[in-house]
Image (cartoon, rainbow, N blue to C red; front, side, top):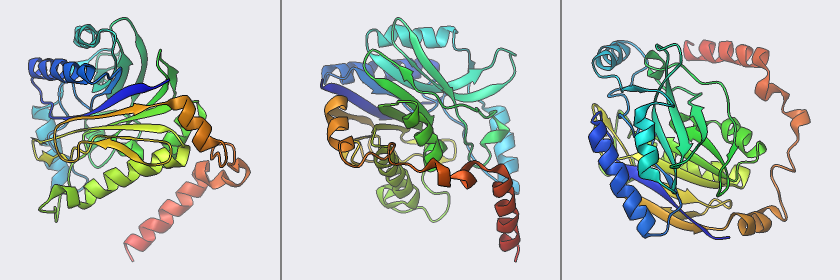
Length: 306
């Protein structure tokens, strides 16, 4: 069965009315092209953080800035996502937001998959870059879930740099992995043409590698334009299980739309070399051995200060 999917590149801010209007317009455009699954970026409802940092005065800048301009905290059952459901109708949507926990205080960088009648799954970002931990708590789980169209898994931004994250979802049966981002250009020595920027290169290489690693369809959405001190690189895309980019927005805002056939692609790609089948978990022990990780972390610190 052929399924039309669309990945979004667009700019989302603190203005919720602007966010809803943009979601509505992009959904209209996607439906006009036949899309039934639409992936919006990380923090599409309420915008992302306005700066990131990891040490020295950069962290202080991050703390001061985020205290003044945190994204609105939204509950899974709150009116904001109900508004998105109303806009979604019979289209399945994945979208990022800042989730407020039941304790009324803890915030997560989160994503949800929904349509007008149901929430199919939600996710809290596990891997946190730079100073993101100053604004969000970290999630701790990866799970795929069923939708009327396919079995789907979700990741957010920095997660794509960790092969284990995508592999967890693939092992849980994900046929489509949606990777939602607010991925910026490099902070230093930024390329004049952002398409040539080293962080754009990494973003695109991770998308291709993770699709091919796991022989799954990969939908990457991303913010575009600027917000605070961050300049986003766009490059929303759809990648097939062979690592082929079927559609991309490059730097521009808009939709990367592609027709995919999950069953046919899996029969073709997994009929010979099937990476999930041919794994050797018996030799992968150090990957999840926390003692091994600690020893290596100490060695890395020694080398960094040598």
